[in-house]
Image (cartoon, rainbow, N blue to C red; front, side, top):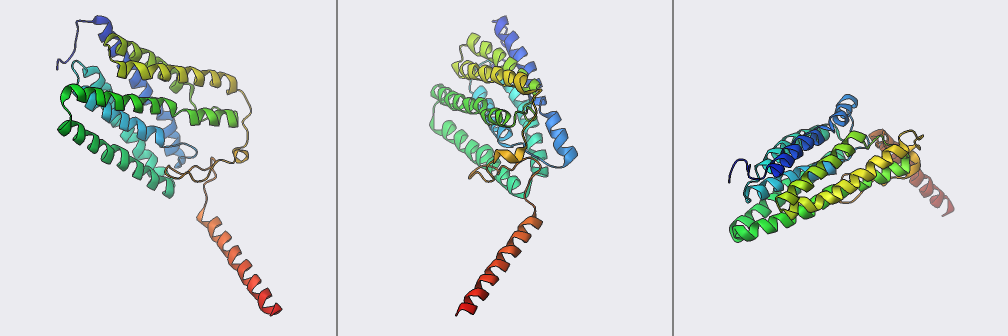
Length: 271
């Protein structure tokens, strides 16, 4: 595999631009994690986008290693693995216990167990020509999931009328990155790179439009949203700054015990 392919200068240019813009995309959550570290709380932020992004980067590198002239895919996804690992480490460090455990389980399931299984099966049982298409199909599906993931954030923005958890620059650079990688995939005739970025560009534009609509709106109180407290199989979701405390749990248990005792006394009096 050649290090760089200069036969198509347009392809090389879009690959370099895609690397530069994607580099900025990976750095966009820094203010979010600065806030998490400063407040020592993950607040209303979710870990799933970072887990999926790490999984996508590792699979994309394996896909690129099985292709020719895909060095530019390897470079940016290598950086992605490093930065997403840092983000997840910070998230796990400051997340409540239940969310921390759920996040660790998800990381182990996807980024270790699932990844090792995919590599083992495709390497030992599938020949290289067919292997590229299978890996490309897996990456295509995963890319759709990555780009659809912001739907939960879009819903939250509409419900709260607040763009607090949807930074404008992240949406902007995601859209720009999608354009660069779409043309890279188009020029390299790689449908597995080009196709999902059409969806990525579409969702990026939607997010920027919503940002323009709601950036000056008065946000609704989070308590009015009735967000689900537990989502089976995913990290738990709590209203911002309203994580359950152990003291409240103890008070509720004491009240339940007192009510049970009162009922038993009433029953004994009736007898």
